[in-house]
Length: 289
Length: 223
View 1 (cartoon, each protein chain N blue to C red):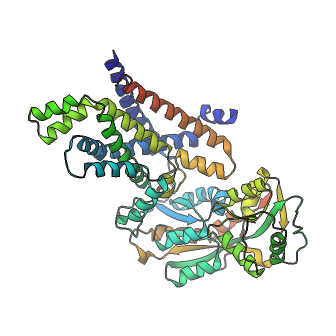
View 2 (view 1 turned 90 degrees about the vertical axis):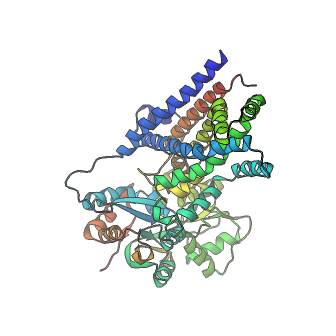
View 3 (view 1 turned 135 degrees about the horizontal axis):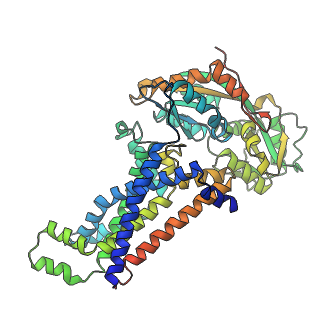
């Protein structure tokens, strides 16, 4: 009796495996859609884009990429990480093209010969978000440095990205401008993406530096508000960088170039400007040939 | 919760695509883990060699390595600037499957080894006295111990289906390409969107239950 039970189990397991394999193979390989016949068919149709979490999670990429695929036939594999990690992926040749926002690091990347071409794409700005009651009294600060100083003075909880992302780099710049080395129990290095940090700041009823795009995308899930904005030092420009093809033969240089050109074309720039969440524009195109 | 069930019942395309992709990766990675894992487990069981205890301890130790460490290790090999970069596995299904296979392989070996010890010891002794060669003994013991081996295979399948570190690091969580149940849950939770995360959590729970049920069935009366 027990042997037949066991046999049943083994057979059931084998049958499940076979079914799963068959069904998922058919389903997963089917992909999301079939390409219309009119679409161009590039030789190497997959382009790998390493980008910051803000472009992916604000919904911008999900909005514009189908148009890019429609126009050029390229499928973009989006790997969403922080700007620091994205640049590192470029350096290792593990990405074909980058969409990032940390100008000084981007320039260093180009100077080191890792990139073939860098273009301005769009911008938005950083804002300091915090509890609606604004316990540190950020409103009316003369600059972002003053605002940060006020947070440190009252040791209000502050959630930092702590992940070398573009937002993190900007945050460290502001602390530097305020001549403060943030440390202590009130300063929390999350090591997480932008949404997660905003959600953590909400949980802790603390402050955080956020890019406006992500903020608009997730603000309705929080009880936080913008406590400081408008400083020219909080300008947040995004650049597109094609990785130098000389780094590795596997780099899809054609695809990277197609993406960079398309994003900075009238079509790409127009689509960026037309992307709205809750009636608000998230990114402003600013490519100048 | 109702929304989570509605997503599944309503046949939400992306949700089910994610489930299918996860299972596809898991089936292949388990397969690639069995191929070396089961023979290694059997060899450890049958072998009479110096350093066997060390080898067994090593396999058991490797089993405990966190998924992110496996991910990091495999990344350094399959990065385009790594030794296996030319294969183009990183941020594709191949990368996830390789990483998961590396993750599950010691588990299969260790569990096969432990499971085979539950067999009647006279069986392998008889094989030896009958003068069976090493290959013959290995195939015979695998056949005799197929029920415990199935258990180790199911455990490996459960492990790779539920892991997130390798899938995230080597697959890149690319939509419509390498996004799996666990990476979707991680992403959605980070965005504060819990409905689909919850629905995939339910699927994972169902898979874990099914795997455990089959596993217990396979060795129910084994003592």
